[in-house]
Length: 147
Image 1: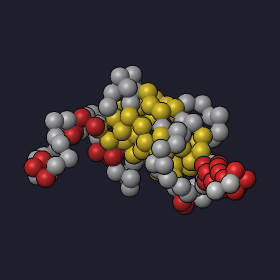
Image 2: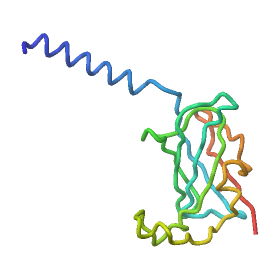
Image 3: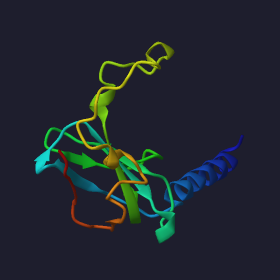
Image 4: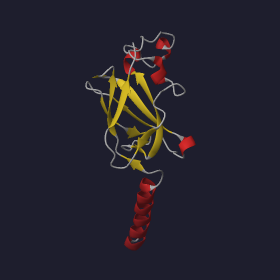
């Protein structure tokens, strides 16, 4: 292969990669905090589900809280952030799976009780139904309450 043909092929490949990385829905960095009865909790999975009823489409984004309840979202396509628009937010307790492995041997073992009310883990019952993600927006605060 001569040098000019190589440069042409390489240039086309590079251009297609750059176009592929920038295509798709608009994403923005998202950070936030989850509290339960006023306190941050570790090991909660936070899932932002774009709401097609509010003209938001694209992949979901997830993050796991640290010991203070803080999280950063990563999109399912491994890019940082979340789709700009309105989301339904689901929160699940990662500690429910503590000690279990994703194997057939553990498939029938019961999960540990959740530390948070079940309504937060159910997309049809979550009270977080219209959470706005905006470019350059402030950190998102999700306040859970319960017994």
